[in-house]
Length: 144
Image 1 (cartoon, one colour):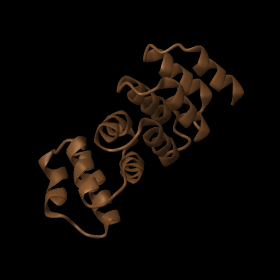
Image 2: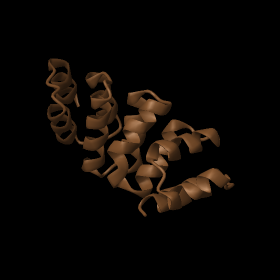
Image 3: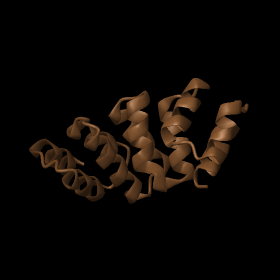
């Protein structure tokens, strides 16, 4: 049932209801499909990420992973995720970890998150948990 509020937000922001999108939440459709349906309705990847995470921050990792796979570059998706709820360090950490786990360049993802206002400690912890320990990442964080 968590997907229903996300679905309603996407439909409201789209300005019109698409029959398939309207039934997604009640049918338990995956975040991948919700994102694809919103893309089909003309929403940008960044807008979709922001809408979904703003509606339910616990879906940050799944949303970032799906958005990167569907349409957007990792740095752009992480930026949208962080900016959706800028004071939520859990979202920043989840977005960074999910992006790194998709194979995105860790240094670019870390830079995008911190440039968007994410707390450096949360970003560093997420990168380390993803198995990424890079001198460049540490330098990016030091420079913030």
